[in-house]
Length: 518
Image 1 (cartoon, rainbow, N blue to C red):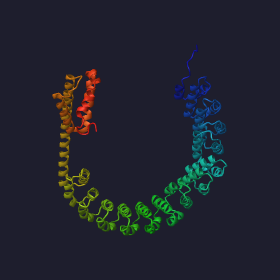
Image 2: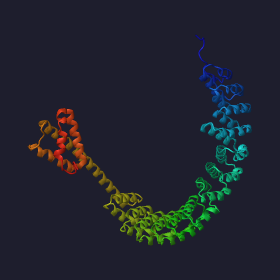
Image 3: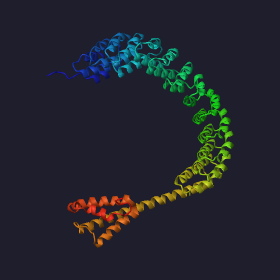
Image 4: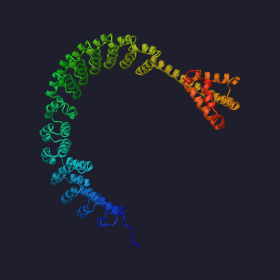
């Protein structure tokens, strides 16, 4: 029996007992060795470096020792950590990143070549990112490595470091024989955000070579010449894709080419052009979009209205008011919404008139957004509309007004809704009581005739009458509910009667009532 218990690592940690913790690194219990290694890293005393280096040879404590060596940051640990790295220690990779000694860059890149697992590779990648500019030149060189995994991971790391020195090499990597490497190169260029990458990424996107090129261009926020040139491509799908991407990028240099594309022969391309101009939001597109309100395609016209609403230029108000009389309801709806977004008081009377043109919900919403007092009475009238959604939209719109008339009308609506809720609650309570009465009466009849049922008896008429009453008050749903409750209670009270078919007997008696039995 030992005279002393195991060493108390927590006490030694608090007392900063370096000697005691170093001694604990040799304890026969692996948990004690791990805790001791961890405590030494937290304390950060350089006296622990050599003992922790020795602990790297212990398979059970290697990751704890490596982590602590990284926290201490002493250069003496670099070579031993590189050795531990080759033994697949992810903690060694992270520790080397924290120390930041250039000797570790090549060994960390070599991790991608060995491919011992995603977790190990990610640790090496994180460490290389920590190195920053020190690692850039070796990483650029590794973009030409024979192993695809090395090229891809290196491209990823270069993007996270964000050093512009890597741009030209990453542009070249867009044409890598491996598509995965090219995608990661495109993503990296987007992270770096250098304008030199715009045209190569645009070209890659135009050729349909890299989906990642789209996201990269959006991050950079610039439209390249190849992408703008794609607006004249013979393939309409390529024109449409280029237009969509130009809208996502939002570069104002694309506005004029997009305006020219408003005359594209394909309506689906024109729709995308209009949407992109709305996303970019440049005022020079307003007049061309106004002209496009007369496009032959109703979908184009509706998207034009949306785009003008997003841009919000007052020049569009009168043309949009005229478009409230468009023959297509879809267009009128979009026009009404656009006028609300622009918020010009000139639209109030036309929107009030539009309440009669089948765009009530959109016109109501826009009148609320504009907030002109002239709309109060028409909106109050809409509170009585037969369409519940219109009534709800009118109530929401009136909340934008501080007008006493609006406040009073909303209070009245609220009182009516509260009364309806109370009435429904009363009806539900009454129906619940009725349901109990119906079930009890059916059970009483069933208990009087447990074997033969009530065919030809006076109770037959009463059972059918109960079924018709239930159907009239709650339809098929309530009939099923009562039937299930009756059957359950009957089974609990009299299994024999249930087994002899009273539930099926009730089915027959109710046959033909409402939708019962189909």
